[in-house]
Image (cartoon, rainbow, N blue to C red; front, side, top):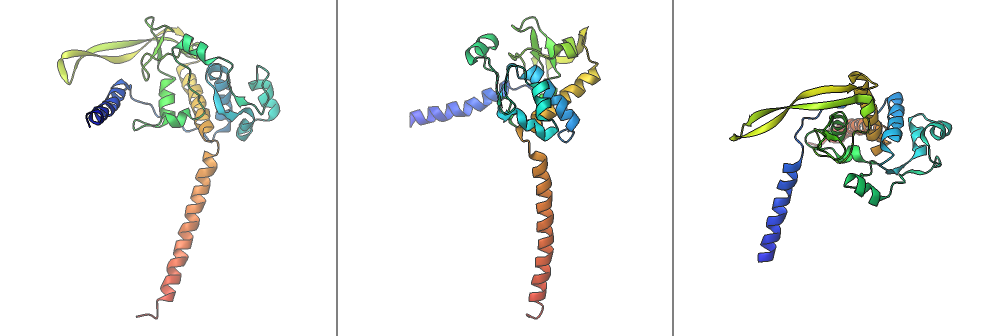
Length: 254
């Protein structure tokens, strides 16, 4: 009985620790571009160039990108670089041991990352859209980068050349819950080095990448939604016919 009580106490404590470690930075709403083929194609290009070096998408095959308007030749000539075949899974050659040594943890598989990051704070797309745009230079971190959504993340800012180098400014304010404590509140960015894209262009590029990640998590989501509407319309029409049939059947019954 004592062991059971201790176990319950530990399990009750774990969620509190996890919640306390979660970032509370507000999420921006990601543009919905899962039906925009041009955006999805650009997102696929960004994914292959900037994400697939470290992160696998082992539940996705390259040739599935034909669903977003790419041909086998376009996939082969533009998105395959190390001898993979069009029908291969999107894996990486980096060994898990090396990844752990370099980054402190094995980079997660991104097949369903947009669905996995959904929470009460926002959709998985919102989390990714905000996360990829809130990196800032931090010389205290091993990679030289930090992130507002995921503090002390092991991932470097792989798209820094596009966005440029920024430093985050923080202001010290009294903790509203404890006047004896001081909290650091984000107060904006300082652009140290410009990127190859303007802020608007970079936000749009990230939106395309997030749209691809969201589509990759469920490539048939748009067909599913259309089919759902058709099914609901059919059931609605059938309900009306059933109601009239019932009314006709019982009209002579008192």
